[in-house]
Length: 89
Image 1 (cartoon, rainbow, N blue to C red):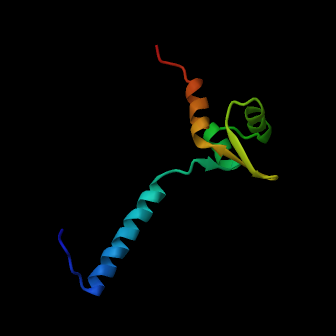
Image 2 (image 1 turned 90 degrees about the vertical axis):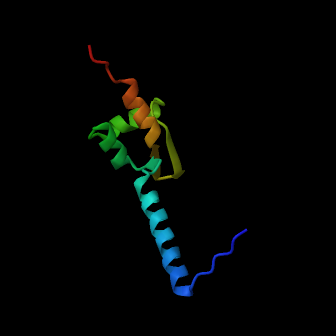
């Protein structure tokens, strides 16, 4: 086992660099659960009623953590879009 000694200033610089790197990685990953506005944007729809129909018929997954908050699963929206994709000739 090797022991590495660092001066305090160098240690904190290294620590800050690691935190910065992790923060950048987390920002690059899209969130799994999105709100209705983002879901409608992904589906390219303008109607909340259409979004509700997709939710009510089970075509896209959703979660309702509180009575007035509905979140949509980004992966299920992508799967729904892919399932309706047409192959080229």
